Image (cartoon, rainbow, N blue to C red; front, side):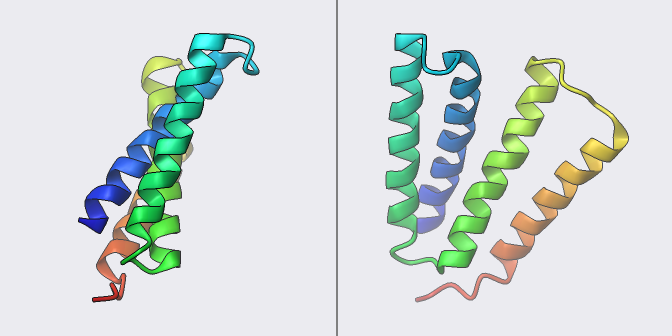
Length: 108
C-alpha cells in the first residue's frame, strides 16, 4: 500500500505544481485553495508512504514523479520547449525513479 500512497502523492505533486502556475502568485483564490489542498494531500500521502519506505527512496521517487510529470505537462499543455536534450533529461529522471524503486531495499 505504501507504493500506492507514494504514486498518488507524486500525482498530487504534479497537480499542485501545475496549480502554482495558474494561481498567479496566489492571487486567484479558487485556484490557490485547490493548489494548497493538493499540497497538503501530497504531503499526507508521502508521510503515509514513509511509514514503510526508506526516506531516500520515498522522497526521491516523490520528487522525481513531480519533476518529470510537471515537465511533461509543460511540454504537452503549456507549449514549453520540446528539444531533445530536455526530453533526455526527463528520461534520466524517470530512469532514476525506476532505479530507486528496483533497488529500494524496502523495509518489511
